[in-house]
Image 1 (spheres, helix red, strand yellow):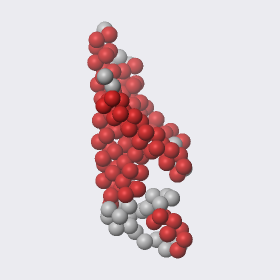
Image 2 (tube, helix red, strand yellow):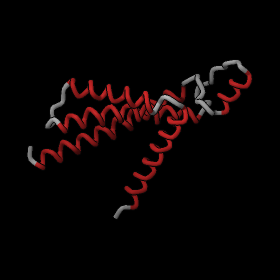
Image 3 (cartoon, rainbow, N blue to C red):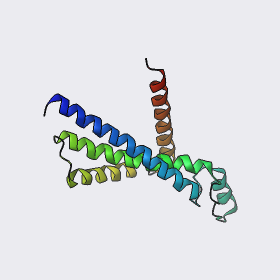
Image 4 (cartoon, rainbow, N blue to C red):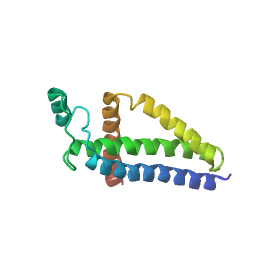
Length: 143
């Protein structure tokens, strides 16, 4: 494989990771709009814990859940595409089911470690938001 072909494969791979993250972040945001379960640590969750009575949230009532689920679902899709695309590039551009199986395995490990506690999820979403802000700032300020 020549350097030009490798660069094209890497560019396709990175664009696939980015677009998958963005598309599934939007899906997660829509899910957060209509999800009746409040995000841990939000005022609605604390009220439910205080009273002991679960009251489902009305649609569009919790803005915190939009960013929360957008970050979580976007990261899961981004990790899956990052792993399976990286394996495809490492294997010389071969895209097959084996790459997808390794991608799902990577998502399983990611979910067990990062998404196992609310604190880790919040830090994950903060890191993702910071990376997005940094990316936008770099894109607008770079010469």
